[in-house]
Length: 390
Image (cartoon, rainbow, N blue to C red; front, side):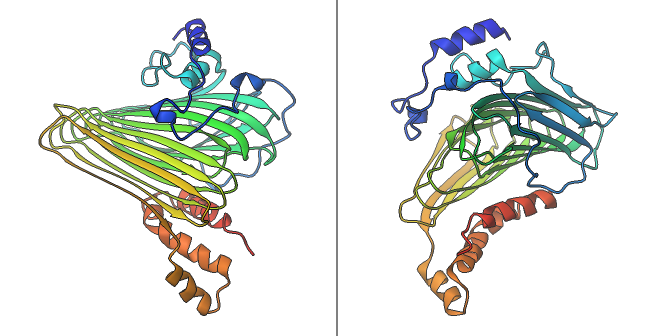
């Protein structure tokens, strides 16, 4: 990866506009990546985590540096070397302005390399914190799960102060090798003044398993890309997502499940709730290559509208080149059931509490898919906290 070439390409590419299909519903006319500085005085300490965890390794990242405060001796849990042979293998930068920007200027990255056959009984934890007013944070994560390894990795994005503005640009590459299992959790809870752009790309090999949880609660606007390549026979991936946007928030998810090998399976389920003037965009594509016979793929995105002024745009898609597959998808946008709300309020519950129960019921099947109990509890609490108390 050449930083100078990436920088030149970043400067050549314009900020995406709404005339481009994948940006049609996300207008970046008010965003200038050059307006954010990479230096300044950092705040004293990150905010409290969403999670209460007993972890095996801990990393904290801000605009000013990366600190590894705990690391398991059996694995490589260390700052990422920009010369690593697998860096940039999954996320290309030649046609993506934000990926090019990251490739050109990132400074703080982490390598997580778990050797073959090793099982970690406690998760690894990474906290990425926006700590400078008007700062830009470029983050890079490279994960290699060798054959037969099993472990969990939790990545949390947050702002030190809820009033901070900033620009976050993250690239994550996950390699799940033969018969390995990776539980990957990515929770985003930036301030409402932070622009957040991210590309997460995984490659899952023969008989390997990826269990991915994505949570979106903060940020102002941006786009998150999620791609799974089912590259080996018997590979499986499960992606579970939950988001809640309110105020003027605008969340945009672009997801891609690519089935390359035969007998692969992917299961994608996203649910979101919106209130006030918030917007959510989801564009999901399942692609089945010609040789990927016996594919079993599913994707759904369902949205609950808590205010009449919200807007949701779910766009599912299928591109199937094989002839012996099972692929299905679903997308819905609905409002709170008035009868359910009336029933609960008629039994003495105030409206906020009634809405909280309805929201929890809406998300319950997605929450049940989250295997790690502390993560499930944190996501549940984050969702319910967005319902006003009065």
